[in-house]
Image (cartoon, rainbow, N blue to C red; front, side, top):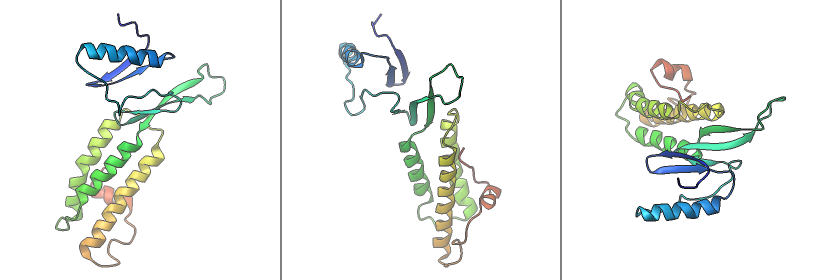
Length: 178
């Protein structure tokens, strides 16, 4: 119907078109089609890229990677993991949630953090994460922020500055990334 040979992936008003060749020509066709509807592409978000270099779409980094398994019929496979921007945003949300609310106990602070962590996990749960190491670092980031929170709350150099073990926080009900 449109004469575009490719795969369209869309969610609400965001979309990606996966093509083998002729991307510039297709981009012009899309601009014409959208102009007929009174719409235009966002110049900041619109770009043509090689899938081997990867791109971010809705908080997920997508990259075409070579298959290293010997004897495989596939030469390349698509890998997905949470994007760098997604990691930055969840870190900022954790910092905002903890803030300087020293009137809360550690248990109350964990109750405040859990919906944020659970929500991020639920959004990224379908991604077969090849970035387990990054998720462990994210858990370490939350532990460190809670340690700093305790240190500032009690204003004692030793309280909270000792290492907060993960099993203590999990025992208090803290959700984990991944």
